[in-house]
Each structure stands twice: as structure tokens, then as C-alpha cells.
Image 1 (tube, helix red, strand yellow):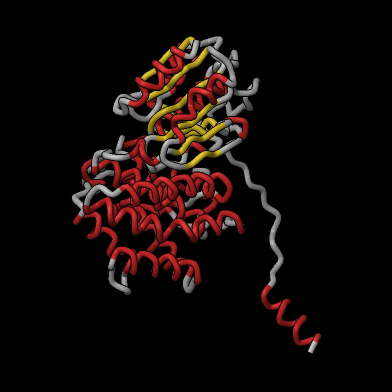
Image 2 (cartoon, rainbow, N blue to C red):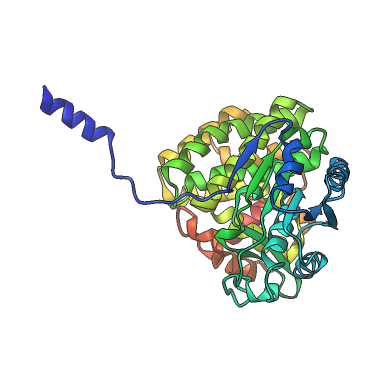
Length: 390
């Protein structure tokens, strides 16, 4: 009897490969937690830099409350995905700051993380950018940074990098350092209520991709798996509901999925969708979330063909089939029609017919995200994924 029991235990257990897990110093999630921002910022000092977008009126209230609490506040507005020049301007705007608050979507939070990293430094941002820059480590520890997302998409509030556009190189690359993880992430789903439908679906598709890719990644670990298994079905259900209309419970769920994606990707990597998206966004200036949503089906199909039978791909296919009411065969290909039905643009709006995709596929194959893809996709397969997304 004892021998049989030991054999049964052995079947259920397997060796767990070593892994690490890094994230923000502290995470607070829930409706109303944004109200903790003033006290949290004052704990780091009175000289405050707010990096913000232009669409959330609550930031005006936050600025007034900080000023009333005795803080010296400087604001920097972010317009779209940050460029090298935007990072230089933000860092120069508040030398001597003691804390940085990033309030907005992923692009805003990335700009805030970059500013917090470079304000204490005497080096230009190009000294630290990967691929197109010198890639040198930060020479000084970043300022404390508090991230307050107002969209449910990128999970930037719990990642250690900032994606920066380099127009002269037609690329988007990362400024990356584990010390760039925010000291505090305040994830308040109420800040996403009433966001425009296009923004909601675009950012939400990015959030969904960012729990699917880490789950299929060759760097997946038990903690990232636990997050993704829970979040993938929730993300599908929330997106389906928000495509139909406003729903607070779905907003909460999508904010949680976005947070889970940030946690997972920071520790398990991404894959070919994001490997392609970074290059396509830099070359053609298409919106990141939409690129990811349109590439998800073609990349899943390409990976599935290359890998053959896979338990994880079968799980993802089942979740998509049941959650989006898609056919059980050709599920990944059917995602295109679903997004068409939601009224979302295809990538032909930005990538003209006849565009030579060879260099795009080559650059994508060299990207850091591609290293975690569950299999190697050749350049012909990558070009086919782009064409399918058009």
C-alpha cells in the first residue's frame, strides 16, 4: 500500500525549474484606491512631477489636492506613445523632483517611468536604450514612481521597462532596468469607467494578448501560469460584455486582467504578437492594442501549426471558442471576423497593399519578445501573419 501511494505522489509531482518573480513594490487594487495617491506621494517628498494624459479630469483634482497638501507640483502632458524627445523634455521639466506620478494609459506610465529613471542621471536616454542605443545600465537609481493606470491594457504599472519610439530608426525599443518597477501601483477600475469604446476594446485586446502569450511562452513559470489561467477566461468575458455596452463589473475584470498581464509578461515574457507589434508600430504608426488584437489569431494559428498537438494551445482554443462563441474548428482564424463585427480596423489602414514586409519580419525576428515565443517562426511565417492581419 505504501509503495503504491509513493508512486501516485510521484506521478502528480514534477521538478519545478528555478524562476524569479519581480513586480512593483506594492500593489493596491479596487475602486477608490486612487484616493490614496496624495498621502502616498507625500511620503516620498514634496517636490512632485505628474506625468499625465489629457482625457482624465480626475488628474486636475489630484494636482489640486497635492498642492493643498503643501506639495510643489509640476505637470507634463503626454500625447501618444513617448518618443526620445518626449523623454528628454519630461526629465528636464523637473530636475530636483522627489517623486514621479504617472496617471494615464500605458504610454503615459512608460513616459513617467522613463522620466523617473533619467531625472537623477546625467546621461541622455540614448545611452540606455536597447538595440538602437548604447544599452548601458542606469548610472543612478530611479526616483520613486507611483503608477495609476486609467486604461485596462498594458499592465505598465507592474513592469520594469518603458517603450520609447525612436523616429529616426523607425523603431520602438525599451528602456529597461529592474529598478524602474514602480514603488506603488494604484489600480482603480473606476478610472476606466466610460472610456471610449475604441479605446476600451483596443487596450482590452492588448490585455488579453498579454495573458495569452505568457501562458504559451517558453519562459512560463508556475506563478505566471496561475495568473494567466485565471485571467484569460475573465478577459474574454469582459471584452465580450464591453463590446456590447458599459458594465462596471466587466471594467473591474478587465483592469484585473491587465494587471495580471503586466505581472505575467514581466516574468515570463511575451511572444511573436508583441515581437511583430513593436516593429509594426514603429514603422507604420498603428495603435499598439489594435495591432496585437489583429495579430493574435494569425500568430496563434502559425504557432499551432509549427508545434503540432499542444495541451496549452488546446486550452486557449477552448477558452476562445466558448467565451467568444467561435467555431470549434479554425477558431484562431475566426478571430478576424469577430473583430470585424466589433467595427475594429484591419491593419491595411496603416500597411498599404504591396508593402515589402521583409525588413519588418526580419526586425521582429530579432526582437526581445520573440525569444519567449513557444517555437521559432521563420520570416515567411511572420510575413504571412502580417498579411492575415491586414
